[in-house]
Image 1: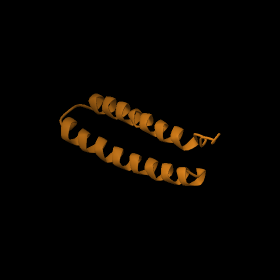
Image 2: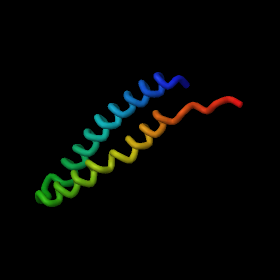
Image 3: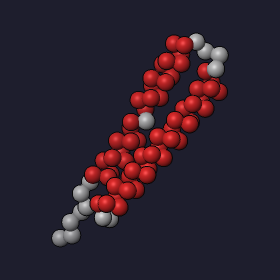
Image 4: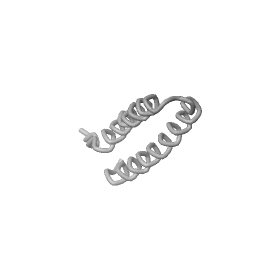
Length: 71
């Protein structure tokens, strides 16, 4: 796969990941923690704010991998 195409696909995946993850995290926060205190909200958004990095790192790693050379 050409490098430019991989980067285009990866960029689209990253944007989709951020948008969908933010929506899901907000929906979960509203549904589960609407009556909770501010410390619970802080902890949830701290953890969920850092958790999206794992799939983003996998996408970025895939984007920068060099194509396998044919022998």
